[in-house]
Structures are given as C-alpha cells and as structure tokens.
Length: 297
Image 1 (cartoon, one colour):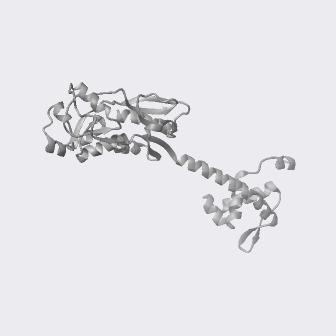
Image 2 (image 1 turned 120 degrees about the vertical axis):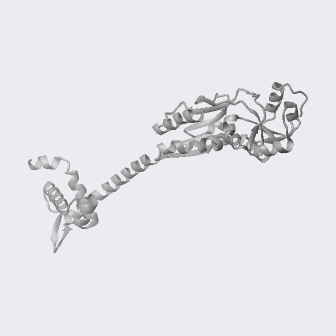
Image 3 (image 1 turned 180 degrees about the horizontal axis):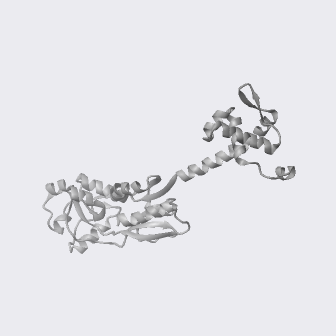
C-alpha cells in the first residue's frame, strides 16, 4: 500500500479502540484487562496504529509505556467520539433491556382476575416489565395504555375491542349475611333485604322484573362507585349485590360469598380487551394480548 492509499483508508478500528483504552487507563495491562486480551496483543495493536499514522504514539519510559505529544493529541481528538459511542450504545441497551407494556384495567377485574393469574405469564416473560394502571371508564379517550380491559358496549373510537367476559349479573351475599338474614329462598324475600348498587340503581330493578317481583324497594340501598367497592361491601355483609360470576369465583369457592339465584340479567355491556387502531403492539404486547384471551375468558 502506498502512502496516499494508506492515508485515504479508514484507520484500523480495533487498533484505535485499543489505543483509546490504553490512553484512558494509562497502561498496557489495564487496557488488556478491559479488552480481555493479552498485553502483547495490546502492544501489537498500538504498533499497528502507529504504522498506519506513520508516527509514534508511545515511547518507553523505564518499564512503562507512555504517550508521546502526538499520542496525547490523538487521544484528545478521539475520546469525545468514544464517549458519544458509549453513550449511544448504553442508551440502546437500556431501551432494549427495559421491555415494558402498559395495561389499564377496571379495578374489580384487575384485583380479582388479572393480578392473581399474572404470575403464569411472567414466568414465561421474566424480562418484561408490565405497568398496570386503573382504567377510568368515564375518560377512556385519555387512556395512554398499550392495552386496556374496559367495561361497556365495545364501541370506543380509535380502538379495536374484543369481547372478554360477559356482563351478566346474579345476586350474591356473604355467608355471614345469609346466616343472619336467611333463608333467602325467593326473589320476594330478597327484595325485602338491604341491596347494594354498583354505579347505578337500575340493574336491580331489571333483575326483579325478570324474576317477576313487583312493587319492590329495589332502588333503595347503598350506591357504590364501582364493582370492587360493591364486592367489598358484599363481603363485609352490608347487603346483597348483583355480581359477575367469573370475577367472584374465588370467593364462592372459599365459601365467603353465596350465589342466591341462577337467574341472570344482562344489559348488553361486557368486559372487552382493547388495543389501539393507530399503532402496532410490540411483540411483548402481542404476547400479553394473546395470553389474556387464553387465560381470562
């Protein structure tokens, strides 16, 4: 290779990296440890770079190898480039390592169904960070989550919605409430007891109408903000509530809750698994989406 060809070629990058490590540490042995090579390999790369630049970058001072003035100047010129390179590399590595999917949930479903089963998914996805937030059903359009499980009719602009859990409800009370107030063997007997209302009072009226019970006081009773509060009030023994069977099965299995009648009412609202129409899910997001469909339905 003639001098012109040598000067117009890129420098040997391995040699430049070796020189940068040597200059930063101030010694061959330290550079060798960082690069996981032998000291002789470091010396070889330094000689290679000097040959390329056609001037010495180091000289022997006693038993140590130190930088020449040209070596110090070259190190000052390249160290900022290596700093930028390390910073960019670390940024990409951190971004890759921090795989995250955000999902927003109705509290009742999140607490009683999603979280208890989540360990099965995390076992197969140990490096994935899942950010779980509450979904405020009154302001769904402001939801910034990758995925959401919502309750309603399934029509939200900008979202694809897939039915997940039926919205049909049946009457429940706690075991202690039944012991104190029972037997509750007819819908008429139920209508005379304290009733708990989830969000609105009309659903109990629908249930009693379906049960052919008339002139009840079903619209009286404690009104609660959401299903989780209604469930807690029921477990506490404050009254009877209309609940969705898939979300309270652990409590009926344990005997804490008692299903009073099989008659269901359904106002057309359900739980839906939702994803945005204007953005693609990551591979991790798709994995979580598919797992929810398999595990929560």
